[in-house]
Image (cartoon, rainbow, N blue to C red; front, side, top):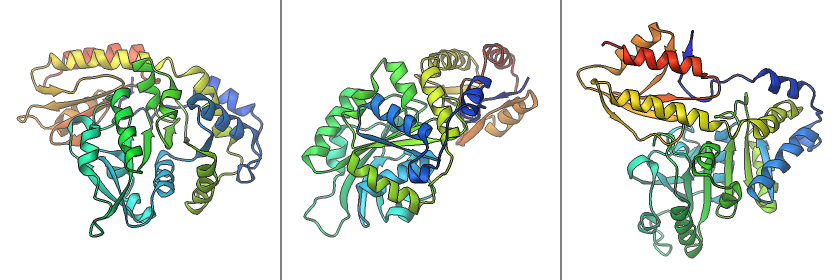
Length: 341
């Protein structure tokens, strides 16, 4: 059997999701006349108790739109050194918004309110960029799917309010954090000016993300989405997948978390593994002993029909997801226990 652990984006829509999609009603979403898109947007806005939500083709476009809404050219945003908006969005921060990034270098993509205070440029010092936005990522991708504590996010919110800064959440995997921490989505809606959420990570959708925001920002987001080329027509077929996923696939994320935790336990027992990041959700990051190469490890598993990716410096990543079944899991654990490099 083939086992793909590269990402939780590799999943394919289930038959039930496809049937739901086929039977949905569609219209032209550029004119806001697609009833299924409108239903999805209203559903997600209600979940987070925010005024509006806007459907996008990708999480990158959603984040980039939020950054453009919350900044002006020449401004600077604060984020983690490992943040997706800095590392994996093609330099869009500078290309799309003319904004630079002030990076905080702390473990697993976390930082504190005190770190933010120290990182804000003095507003009256015109030689440095104007700090205007703080971006947080939950769960942290390069941090191994780690979850922020709401208490710290609230402290950062206070700093933002005191310093007239906007506050954005890259919530690509917020579903995982909420399930793991037993939280309510509205707790995040009360903290952030803008939130991006992704339907194709963890929830099994083929494509799609949403931006949550105020009514005022919603009107600007529609314009920016158009500028970025993100207007779609009968996108209700994609939105229908999102509706199905939100109603059926959130709580099952705990299965992914449980399997990831079991993989962590097996990896920690292998002599050629030097470190395994603590697993909270569905991402496992681990390091191979320097006398072995991550490339050899990847190639060895590829011969066993298992796919994963390297992160450099002999680090590797595995991601569990809904297409990674219990049969896959049992087989993969046996492969790990019997591996010989």
